[in-house]
Amino acid sequence: MGKKVTITISLDADEDRDLLRWLGRQENRSAAIREALRARVSGGVTLGDVYQAVKEVERLIRSGVVVAGAPAADNGEIWEEPPDIAAALDALGKL
Image 1 (cartoon, rainbow, N blue to C red):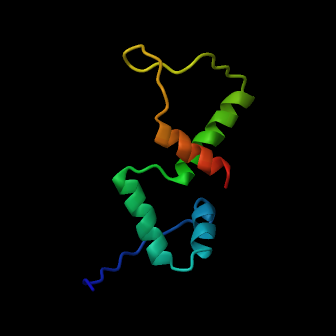
Image 2 (cartoon, rainbow, N blue to C red):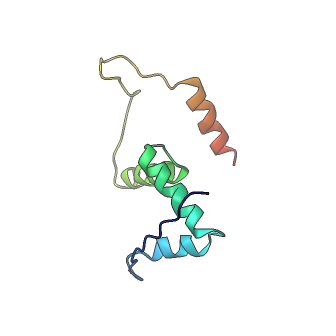
Image 3 (cartoon, one colour):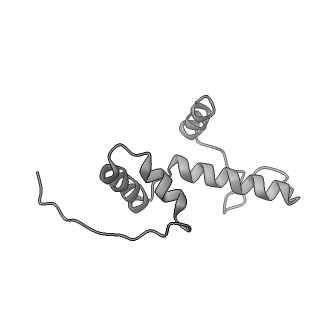
């Protein structure tokens, strides 16, 4: 096992209430924090990222934004969702 390094952070009881609740639900806080940091550093998309994107779309719809047509790629071609991504999204919908 490698050498341990302890890092201290401060959270605001009001502004960081969501983080404090999340931490309180974790069986192993250190492992949960390491996993969250690695996901952020690696640039990977998390379920939390997808949830935030969905909430933003809901907000836009409520505000009256209307989107028509399929999204276009940078070169003007119609963008097609890769089959593996489509399957992953379908699996999320079944959870």
